[in-house]
Each structure stands twice: as C-alpha cells, then as structure tokens.
Length: 300
Length: 273
Image (cartoon, rainbow over all chains, first blue to last red; front, side):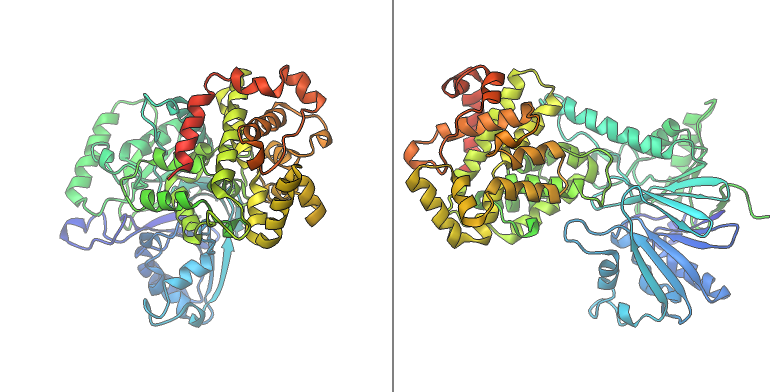
C-alpha cells in the first residue's frame, strides 16, 4: 500500500515561509491499497487537497478514520469536496465522546452547525455512514484490516494499526505516553508506576514488529517538562517506542506549530547523529507534507 | 441511571474548584474521586464498559486514570458536578453526610482488615472500593422514590430493624439488590458485584471470600460507631462463617486496627466542608 502524508502539523495550520518544506497543514494521512481502496486517517486541513485530488477520479469511495475529534484532526472536513457531491461514498470510523455520550456523527455534525458553517451535515449530498469502533476492534475495508488501540491523550484517542498488501503500519493519532502523577516520595508512586509500565507494555506488544510507525513527536525532551499532560509525545518517546517494539521505520510527525523548517532539520540531524553506529533500530524519517512511501509489497 | 445520579454537595464545590484551575495536580483530583462513591462508580462503569472491551476488569481509580487519561476523568467529574448535588437534607429525609461518612468508614475498615491479613496492595484497593460502594443502592431509592423512601427510613428507625427488611416489604427488593443490579449492568468486576448484592444476605453467598467477609464486618463496625437512636439500620450478628474467619467479636474489631483512628480522621475531614 502507498502512504501519502497530506498534513504533518500539530495543533493549528501554520502557513508561512518558514514552514513551507515540512508543510503547514494539520494531520491527514492518505492510504491507497494495491487494490485501489482509498483510506484517510484524520481530517485536518491536509484533507482539503486530498479531496480535490480524489475528485479527479470521481465517483469517490473513501473511508475516513478519525483518531480523535480535537480541532486539528477534523477541521478540514467542511472543505472535503467529495462530501458535497452526489455519488460519493464516505464511510467514517472512530470513537465517541465517553463523557457526554456523543457519537461520531453528532460530533462531526456539530462543527457544521448554522453558526459555524453555511451547509449543515444533513444537507451533504454524499452517501455517508458512521461506524463507532470499540477498543481492540478490527474492521475490514476491502483488502485492508484496521485495529484500534486507546492511546493516552486528553480526549479519547485511537491509534490505528493497518495491515494490507503484506505490510503493517500504525498511526498513533496524538499520543503522550502516560506519566506518573505521584512524586517518588508519595506512598502511591510505586503502585502507580507498575500500572503505567503494564500499560506501556500493552502498547509495545500492539506495535511489535510492524513495518512503519507514524508517531506524534510534537516536543523535544527539553520542552516537555512545560507541556506535561498536553497529550503529545517527544521525539525521544517515539524513538523509545520504536526501539522497544522493533519497528522497521519511524515517521516523526505532528510538528509543533512554533517549529520552523530549519529547526526541524536541526533536530533531525541531531537524532541521526545520536543514532549513528547503532547496529539495529528503526530507520528514522522526519515526515513532511507530500512525503510518499510504501508499506508492504508495492503495487505491481 | 448513573448519568443522573448526583453526588455530594461538598464534592460539587470541590470538583468545580479543582477543575476550574488548569494547574490542579492530577493526584488531587484522583484523591477526590477515590473518596466519592458516585464518582468512583461512574469512572469504573466507563472504564469497564463494553466500549473499551478490556480483557481484564479495572478495579481501581488509578488504573482507570492510566487507561483513559486524567482529562477524561476530570471531565467526567465536571459532568457529575453539572447534574448538581442531592440536597444534604432532601425529600427522603436521607442524610447525605451520614451516608457518605458511613460509606467511607466501611471502606476504611474493610481496607484495614485486608491490610492486617496481609493482602497485596493492589487487592487492598478493591476492599476499599467495595466498602465505599456497598450501599450505593440507597442513593437510587433516595433520589428516585424520595417520598416512599422517607417512610421506609422512618419505619426502620422506629422499629430498630435493619433497613433492608423494610425496603423488601415496601419495594420487593432492598438497596443491596438494587446496588448489585446496577453494578452488574455497569459491568463492574464480579467480586465487587457480589459483595454489594449480598451484603444483607450473607448466607446466600455460595463461597464467601475475604472481600465479602471484610465488608460485612466493616459495615457492622461502622454502624456500631453511631448511637443506637441515630442508626439508619440495626447491627446484624456475624454469620458463623464470618465469626470463624474473623476469630473475634464485633466489639474487638475497631481496637484490633491500630491505624483506624488516623484513617477515620482523614475520612471525616473529607465529608466536612
């Protein structure tokens, strides 16, 4: 299957001269299986251009998996052209809001309410379905198999493991590995740490041995202490997961909106220098908008 | 039903306080949830719902936080605060402060008994939670049929009998059963469900374990602390299985737990505003 990064930016779109190489659009990943099925992961502003390109081969049939419903992962949807075109087929998959019990349709419809957008959800012309996924559930879309895992974020967030054409990748959505809320001198510290270690071990075994990991690397370790609990990983937390799980390639994404192209280049150079000479471990790639790569057998 | 279950007025204030400050330490929020029966059951219900499809049931709040994240727990707490509080003096004449104190007392004694018996830390949490939740069915009665429940409370106090008997003759089921049904529907762990369901029908438990024994004993110790005239429900004698297991009469239990006084003092500050 072929993967195309349509948006690699975290939090908010950042157009500008110093973000032009890694790109300013928020998260969207396009997957094309060898059989030609189209899957999109997240609907940040990167989905707008994906929609225009898909329309070149109308009628469009596409499955959109939403990791979570924070703005930067859904804000491109009202500008996803296939939704407005009769004959399009759009199947949404994702979790729900476990606190206020809103399903995916309600959440997405809300962003198209009268005060936010001129067209309402029930006026869309495409044939649309919504499927709520539970954790650990596997769904099949044509030749692709997709399984969910809850990954820690300030809202319910699913990582998606996708297998097709003999290859497997995982997209974390937004993921901050859980940290201990107690300090080492608190009585509860050790018990809590055990639970965290067990949970992290679950995640490692879910990711074990896959070909590619597309991982939230918004912060540097130096920045992280100021950002604890914001729901994002660091370059190093991604490397740690990839190393422990024996992943083939690691794609670092969800770049901080404050990060310039030059800064990303410097961070990338530093990572490569630090890992130079390591006999094993994943190939590390700093993801950028427009980046394309294969997972599993390429289309013949 | 749990979605409409209000919590304690003191905690509504605390929740609003803690959740309106972005710098609140997560452990303070966890402490609040751990001491509140309604918040506790709501978190356990969510984490154990089919929706998360966990292979192993989550039995503690901390485990829940690791699993679904502190912000979701925080927003659950806010959603409970938004329902409002069951008034401290409500139509049922049900004293929320007394109820909460009794729940915390039972939880604490059950926990300390487990501790004395050398249970591992991770299991001790379950004893605390079982004690905290054992009477949760009473809140359902007090909230949904307040006027009838007022009469039930009155009758039990006047006759000096256990409240479950009066409930059964009035409604055909008692608060233990109601709590058990809810706990089961909310997919809480089986031992917790059993402990809630049978805490007034001990002889119906097939093979009672330390959890059921401890909560039964703790419940009586908690009732014993209240003067007879103010007791909501009479003390029940130990069934033979409990006596055999415990090896001491009710009067000696509190004295056998050296940490009880300090722990109860902590619990008491929680119930007071």
